[in-house]
Image 1: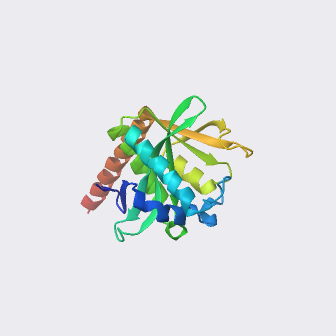
Image 2: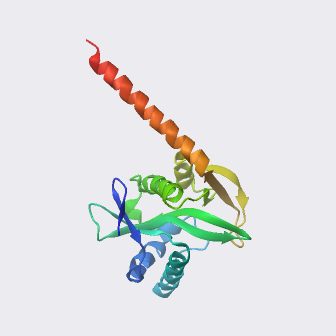
Length: 198
């Protein structure tokens, strides 16, 4: 089953995605801000994929495989929501990784907005969070644009500077959605009024 955003197709990951996972996560360019570096080989990608599939079976959700509606058979990235454990804390984590060919097109923002809606409305999550490196300004902009707010620094990678921890509650997200809807209604009213002017 595929889920859709205006431009993207999202589906659960499957074992046959191993080569695409390695193609994207093994690319040094997509790991510029990742202190762990690119995946070293296909076997590593297969191990990560097996872990993701087990997580999906346990929790009922994990990152999606992502394609565009214009090219549904070509994966351009992986991302969405997954469960991560940090210390004694369970985090409903928003994350993504796109192939370089998909950069600069607004896909990360489109995916993130959909993931928040899916997480809060379909999964009933209370809070969704994300971790980002302090110098990854593009991803920070995506998180802030979609409503997440900086909470604290966390040490989630050994021998690396701390990550920035962003989060949004269901209540805060609902308030943002209500405000956006009100703004849309106001804009439509202004447009209609302008059309009625002589």
